[in-house]
Length: 359
Image (cartoon, rainbow, N blue to C red; front, side):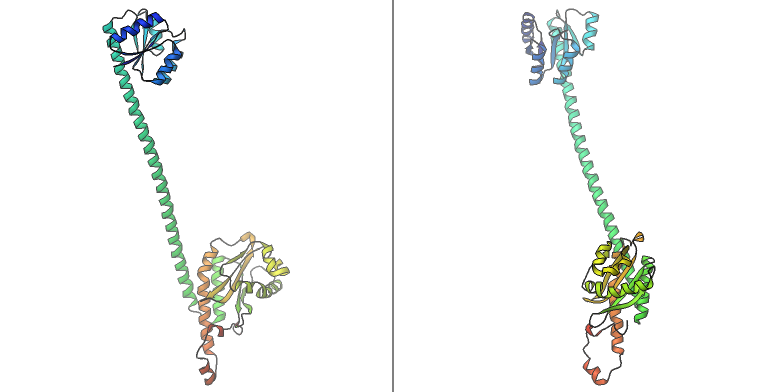
């Protein structure tokens, strides 16, 4: 049964129309005021609203806006005393979808109300379809957004994997190149010269020093490249480094970078003044747990070392230490010995390898 809301303020006329609509088998609900009409529309769905040209002397437009907020699908049918052109135009402009006169017969009333119920059902169906489409659009949008995030995450992972792979390939190529170069050096001085030349080629102009330990782990300067320091001051500094920094670094696994002159001053004291404004990098070169050299690089902080330098040094330093060990083993075996002493020294260890003479 079509549900009809009758909005009539005059009690007698309202009662007559209620009886008439009931006789035509419509589900009728009456509202004596605009406020009652909106309350009923909020509580239930209606197919049609029968209303006179004005409700409680309020303008049509204001009432139409309130009705549309509560029942968008309900069809507004204006009840007019006559089908006068001016009243009809005003009703249509105010939102009425149909016009009935107060003297309309029952057949016309039944036909118009059923037609209004049909249009209301179609509008509800369109609204529900639009709602389903909006819901699907929201779900699709969320799915697309989720897919984009996953693709973005996968892209980042692929790029990171490619970057890591490229980095590993570069490290492997660097290590192979450095190992091939050092394998040709069987003399300590030549080895140190080659290592410093290779480092300077990779880092650019810089001050570089290599400190070598003797059998008692006392350090001395093995090789040095002076780029921009006063020679006498540099000699004093490097001599002090042997006793200050090297003992601290001989068991240090990490590559140390002194970017703050105050940090370096705590190690070197007054001698740090020459490199207070320098970018300083120091590290140990170890093989099988034993330190074979300590290297120190420093230059002006305005030309600071690249952030990629630690990775390169971490690749090169164990190769340098391994070649140092090989050279020392050769030198140790080549030392002239009496047969008896040689027999006693059949078992050799890394502790026998000292740099004092070679340095």
